[in-house]
Image (cartoon, rainbow, N blue to C red; front, side, top):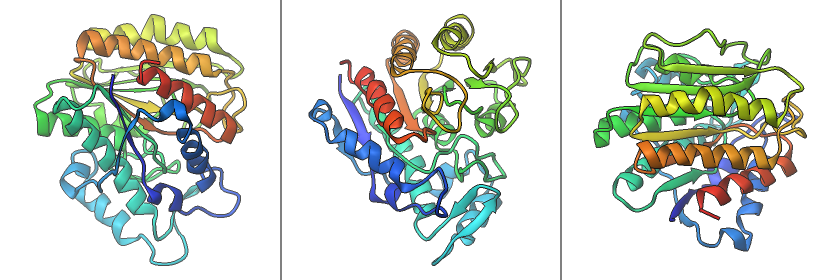
Length: 309
C-alpha cells in the first residue's frame, strides 16, 4: 500500500511565544521519527499553499482576509488567548490545508490509498469565522470539502480522536447533510463543546465524550459502539482523520490514559471502514500531541498502520 507523506520547513518555522506548548519542537520530533528506516517507503511530497477558493469552502472570505492581513512581517500577532502568528505561521497553516487537498487529489488520481500530513499548527478548532485553540484554518474540513468540489465526492467524513473536541469541524459541518463529523474527546475539557446529544441538523454529527482518567477500554468502546458504526452508516466517499495524539497518558494537556496501541487500533478500524465504504481513501492530518516522545511514538504507530505494516 502506497502512503504519501507531506512535510514542509514552514511547519518547523511557525512561531509561538516562549513556553507555548504548540512549539517547533513538536514538528522536529515527528520529523526525526520519520527519518527512521521504517518509513523509507513513504512517498514524500511538498505541500502547496491552499488557494483562496479551497479555504473559502469552509471559511468566509472576510475571515481568510482578516487572518492573512494580520499576519505579521516581524514579531507575533495574537488572535485569541492562546493563538499566535508569526511571519511564517500563515504559510504553515495554508500549507497544512493545501497538503491535505493535494493528498485528496493524489488519492482520487489513484496514486495512493492514503496520506499523512505532518503539519503544524493544528486546525480542528478553527471555526468558519474564528481562529482559536492554536488553529487558523481547518485543514481537515477544507480537504473534505475539496473532495466534493474537485472530484465529485458525494459524502465526506472527518473523524477526530484528538483529546479536544474539534468544534471548528463540527461548526463547519453542522448544517451539511453530506458532511459527517465523528469525535471522541475528553469531557469536560477545552473548548467545552461536543456533547453526546449534539447530532447536527441532519444527524450528521456523532460525539463520544470520555471522562478524564479513562483509558483504552473507554476509548475503544466509544469508537467500536458509537462512532465507527455511525461512520459506516453514513457511507463516506472519503475519510479525513484529525489525528491528535494528546489523549496519550503522558500528554500534559490531556487527562486520558491512551497508549500507542490505542491509536494503532483506531487507525486500523478507520481503514476498515474506508476499505468497505470509501475505496480505501484516507487522508490523515496531524492535530494535537504535546509530549514530544509520546507524540513521536504515537504518530509512528499511526503511520505504520496507514502503511500496512
